[in-house]
Image (cartoon, rainbow, N blue to C red; front, side, top):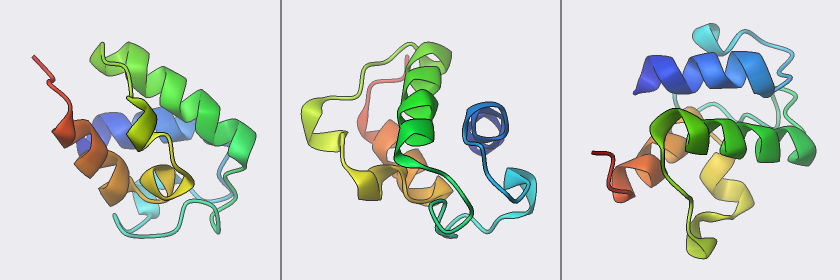
Length: 79
């Protein structure tokens, strides 16, 4: 899951740092991700994992780090 999240961030996050070099708990917004880019990341993750983020997970902090994205995806049924 980690490598897929990092690939999606590389393709859609518009980060100033390669996601492959970031610590899992690094702040993605400090690494250059904008609110607009976070929406693109969310949509790409939904497509990649065939899930839909429920309203309670549509918060800035959920997409604030690779670890928090992974936790949120872990809450969803990824069958």
